[in-house]
Image 1 (tube, one colour):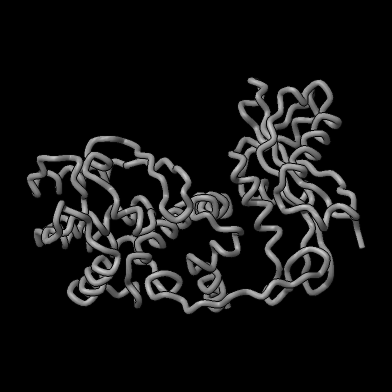
Image 2 (cartoon, one colour; image 1 turned 45 degrees about the vertical axis):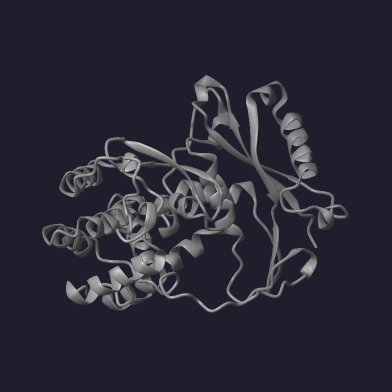
Amino acid sequence: MSTPRIIYVYTSSDPALDGAVRVAGSPCEGAVSPFLPANCQLLRKIADNRIREGEGSAAARCTLRHCELSGWFDRKGEHEVSEQQVRRVLTEAGVKRLRNKDRPGLRDWFLCAPSMAVAAIASLKAPAAGAPSGREGKTTARKTTPRRAGHGAADALDWNEAMRLVRALYDDGRYRDALLVGSGCFLGLRISDLLTLRWRDIHGPQAIQITEKKTGKKRAFKINAKLRQLADLCHEQEGIEDDSAYVFANPGSAGGRPITRQRADQILKECRSRYGITSAKTFSTHSLRKTFGRRVWLIQCEKGKGDQALLLLCDVFGHSSIAITKRYLGIRQEEILSVYDNL
């Protein structure tokens, strides 16, 4: 059995490298690794020491961003993620790799966010379907829960059909519902976060920062020109005077509280039948988030950057691997079906 490795991601504060990211690895004592959590403080100290030993005087200009044990198990035995594999994934995703004949070491640096490198590591770690997981051959029983409609079972909308739905709702004077579909498709937020938006968040500003209810993480979102235009029109039509009011307010609630997730689901199901939605068999609030993801992916595919888009979406959605992101967006099934078109 091979010795597990510590794989880590760090950034350079050297102005000449413009915040570039590097992935490196080092052996971890086999007798110690089974007792180390995946990302514990001791592991970080070991990784920090390795960086300083390997980089010499340049170590002072490096900041550790992530580290973990790289070993995992599948049906064929123990495997490891190496820094070379992560570099390959980043290169295939179209991430720019620094090269300089006068500084040969630059070939290991990439101009990307640390989260992209971490997502690349996660995608390489994802075991094959049916493979056991855990260090030293331990398997963990997975708790299975029924899949909720509107989450894994939800279908993404065709983008053009989604935009037609927004227009139809607006033309029918359903401004709140038009903005619900539009902001869901343009922002890709979970419905729990979408319903907390206030008019001041999307009427006027070019970007907002929210704390996600599910993860507790702070995230920044850009309000693009199309969404801002829709928000401005709906703001005017609704005659909003208080921008601190909830965008998706329930008119019958005390204090103007937002509608519930269940009510939002009901609205979308009614829209599917009334407006003849055909691209989504199951149309729920989570369809909007998936529509956003597929739109981002398809646009980047046209530019030859589909893999890079998956790395970014993996981070945006908080998935542990690109494989999960592909299943989430229904890409795997689409790729399988496309085989028949090539016969």
